[in-house]
Amino acid sequence: MKSPDAAMCRGFFFVAAGDGQCREPFCDAPLLGWSAMKPIAKNVNEASIPPGLVDAYLTHFRTQNDSLYWAWEEVDAATESLEFGLPLCLALVEAAANPAELAYIAAGPLEDLLRRRGTPAAQALEAPARVSARVREALHQVWLSPDDAAYTAWRAMVKKYPSIRDRTSIRTP
Image (cartoon, rainbow, N blue to C red; front, top):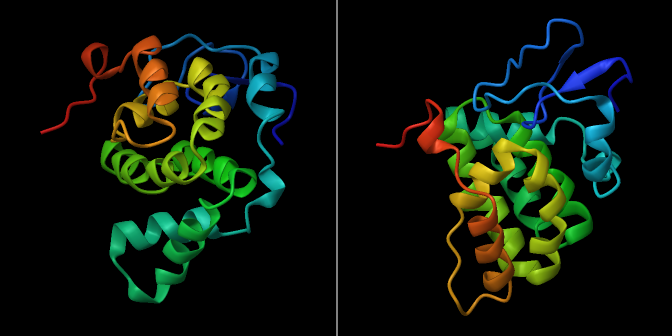
């Protein structure tokens, strides 16, 4: 958990309080006080994420190093459970270094979590989507079919929280 003297933007990136500038590349929002994290923190159990898993998963994506395939398998298995899959997906979204990584997470573990856990997963993502530009953008990159149990709740959330692509520098080819 971050210290109470930190601040955050809507994209989860924590910066030293004082200058009021967001350093999160996908977000042009003003910094919010520490209390803004509470709606997310009460729904996320960061202790359930094995140390090094987020870094190994993203490094596997970046390098395609087969020795890190175990991380992909662990993340895939975690999305079978809302208890483990939700905090892991949120940690991955927070750790994404660029739009390509965010898209990979959205089309992979986040989409899997929504498909496998259905409406409860979509409902659990409501609070993070409310305050995080990254979560909103990731939700816009998920593809669910009307046959998926989470479809209605996910679709409503996507309509409620528009994509930030049109008002920031994020562009997809």
